[in-house]
Image (tube, rainbow, N blue to C red; front, side, top):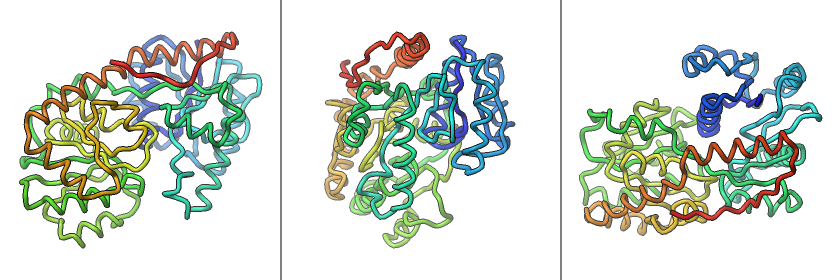
Length: 379
């Protein structure tokens, strides 16, 4: 099997990690891979993918969302169309044209830019809608990372149900195999942890307001790890306003080594999002031995089921109470972690990669195999 996997999002937060994990797993199984990578990431790519002789990178002079790249990318794909069996885009940002003779698979991770949370960002919503509409129309199969994403997508485009297949995300080996190799803490004090970007839907304001209510009742610091768009953003301003600068530790764009260490030694992971496509960080935290409490939203109910310890993402008092309940009850904390570890076994890497390969083979062989998009989880 020969596959083109678009790599313009390489090193780009969630989609970049999704791309990297899948590409390596496909290569391990003997799939020949062609992939476009921004030229300025060449050294990092060659370091990360050293030893994968069946991956052929094509380094380009443009990046994701580049207007010139939107057209240049078309020529790249035309040049390799006879060498690949299908084009796989792990996102919805397709170039101007893709050879129509080839099979196209895309991944829809979420529809967050179309949510009410971002309703005032009219230009961003309009562009995102255009990209999604075009991508789902052109593609032969659409991978959604959860039932929740598939449901939202079908509300907008009900005619594409026959194209959709839900394939969940999996926890990368680095959050399993390195767990017992980490011996030394980078933070000596006890702490609560959040990992993720600082966009509005992540609901960090609620997290800070909940934490300020209990900071005098617990010895813990609050650690926030993830990227941000400005040197000083709304979260920095709120930390100062709430006088939390001595109790909040921030890691901006932390390395994987730092994230692994933070997961390993945190007393509790808190995920207060208002909307998600899947929600991989809490799965990673559990895999590293850290129990999680979660906002009570449909997709996190879907992923964690009865193992989840949920709070109202619009109620800072409920969040504060939930933290105290877990922190001060070691038996409850241990039981939560035990249940959650059992739950995430469902997201087996081997099983999920096989689902991808089966889908690829079906599309390539044009068997028109019928998939039901809705998945049922059981442990």
